[in-house]
Length: 140
Image (cartoon, rainbow, N blue to C red; front, side):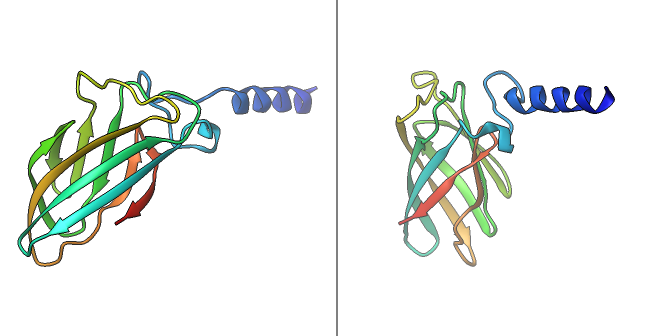
């Protein structure tokens, strides 16, 4: 009896999507319907750089609202941005959806970017996520 009850509870738990906050999926094996890809195209000029990003929803569920996050390993500082509401608490950077683009539907993409300065090495960011879901990143 106990064994069958545990099995049923486990089956129900695996069938339910797990969410953190409204519209934000947890990055777990149960969130396979969520997927993202990011293209990161940086142009460096020695003490600064500009990045054009394309954020794509590769899953089957809409991200709404959405938050793109990543971490810089160096001394990079965002100084201006477009097509998102950007903030930085070094080394973490966050961009939330602009009011005119509140969601990214399955198969859709959103272009955005920023200008930043740095000292030392301008390393690519790590830990790129969209609403907590790890993204596949292509660095151009």
